[in-house]
Length: 160
Figure 1: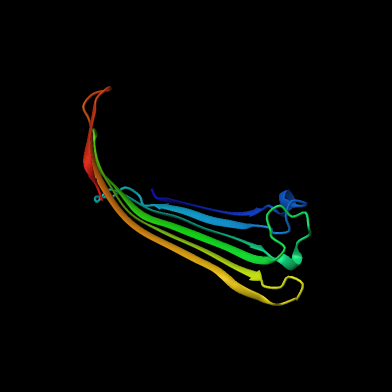
Figure 2: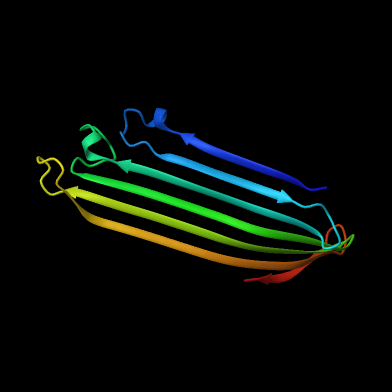
């Protein structure tokens, strides 16, 4: 028999950051797993998780006591990630199985900063910094697991 699981989160931290900073981070993620029933090819699972976060420090919305924002600059930070994969468990016999997992990881981060050339003049910001990073990774692993006795197991496989 197969099954599924899905979960999502949205973190509201505005209450915690009150009085410390005017910038309120926004975090959210979603995860899932779908299992097939056992069949002649084994049991399959598809899984994944993805999330993002974002925060803006805006100089015209801060007060003098803000611990994180500067009075002459706007900055924005965005990040996201995703992981997806497929897993197969194949039962060779009651003491041996083969497990194979194929997966991908994707990550992105962006930072943008605008600084006021003349803080006393409104709307004169110029972009001075921008940084983007991306990382994509793919993996595959497979191993054979054999239970020799209650205390001995042999495991051999590949990871790439």
